[in-house]
Image 1 (tube, rainbow, N blue to C red):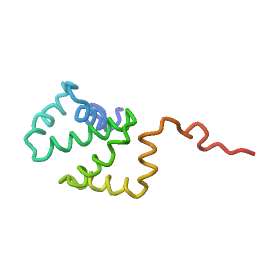
Image 2 (cartoon, rainbow, N blue to C red):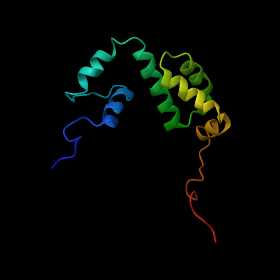
Image 3 (cartoon, rainbow, N blue to C red):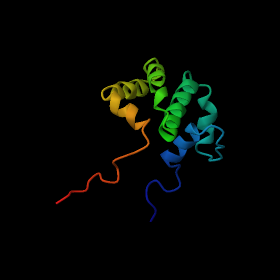
Image 4 (tube, one colour):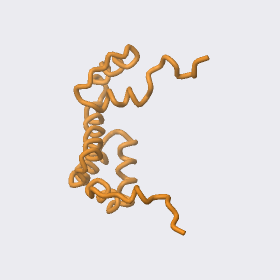
Length: 113
């Protein structure tokens, strides 16, 4: 017996097709959605903001965060406005996380006796 999602497009894969510029989408379930995407008001701006944020995460470009947050707050998409508002609650930590190359991840969760 197959799981309920068997044969359906996984949301992460659909999101990847949306985020990665030039990534061809041949999936018959997602391709029509992406084609209509260009006809939805604000969708290009939303896609660009998502791509810019992904670029900041992957390439540690925290110096772009202020400009990105301003654009997100002006976005018609409430989720992007909420994300920006949430990031501002701990702005210094977010900026450091997008800028500094070292991490305490290796020791996180370890208890010294």
